[in-house]
Amino acid sequence: MELHFIGIIIAVCTFLIIGIFHPIVIKAEYHWGTRPWWIFLLVGIVAILCALAVSNVIISSLLGVFGASSLWGIGELFSQKKRVEKGWFPMNPKRKDDYRPIDPDETLCPVHHGKSLYTNKKD
Image (cartoon, rainbow, N blue to C red; front, side):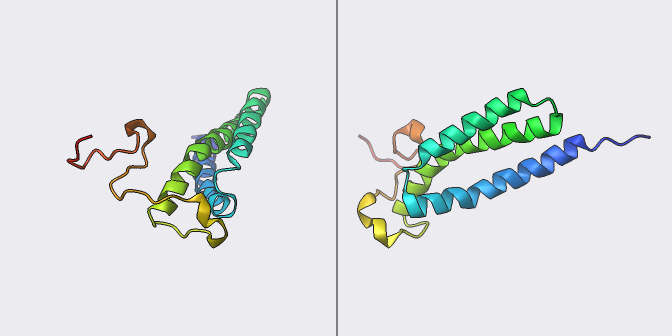
């Protein structure tokens, strides 16, 4: 019986890439706010284009995961700012003016335009 480890290798590396992006987003928002969103965009696009050009399945897959994680990081960067405004994460004291007070019932979901699904408030 021959074993094939490509799927396991891709899965473990995907888990690690996604796990690495969490602290990157948190640190980026803490130090620079949402300004570096365009860096995440460029890195994501370049990684995805490279994934299309590479013939090795493992490397191509990991480049695609890295690119998708970078693009996903853009939304997480803006959500991280809201998490800081809600007090869930520490605020950079050098950038206090970048934050606004936030309603405790406000959601992080952009689809609901900041309104929580779980409150009974009427507009």
